[in-house]
Length: 254
Image (cartoon, rainbow, N blue to C red; front, side, top):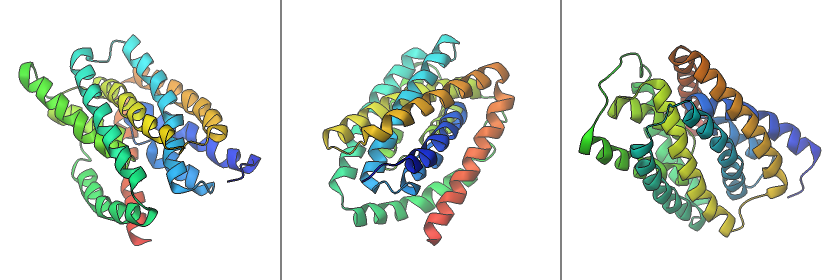
């Protein structure tokens, strides 16, 4: 496809906004993936280029959360390793499917995701006791594999699902859930990106400036989340959930 200044004008501001939201509460893919499609990028290239830009933004967010002490490293690394495997498997499925088959799969996933988001809209209001021992590591591995596969195959809402899973199943606070979500999401991004690059589904001319915008958005988002904490994260999380539900309903109707 031909990339013009209009392409950058559409994509870059939305990637910055998506990066900001993603750093705080996940769900940035709700904004970033459609941004490429609005700019006329073919669907497979949109998936790959989106994964490329988001990987760099997620890396800076992970660094900031880690430096602030908001990542549980041992269970986080296990979850990230399983997410890496899951995302790679999910991305292989995507590149093997035709566009029509991919649309059919998306149509099946959309209602299930919408229902899940609606049922979990009050997440994070009550603090829970953190999981420990074998339960902590078993649940961490399961979360990484399942959500990693979802991320590699479909994508939108992955970070939000991570935050929901870490708070609901592991008992993490919202700030720790956001930090660990970034670590795991980074692994799933890299796993998916490897598959997309191998199959030639990344537009680097567009992806590199998009990555810069993603880094800027993620940097600002993490700084705000760390400074203000759960009072800032919860409304952003609810906003992300609401946007995802609206997008899913729109996609179903269209």
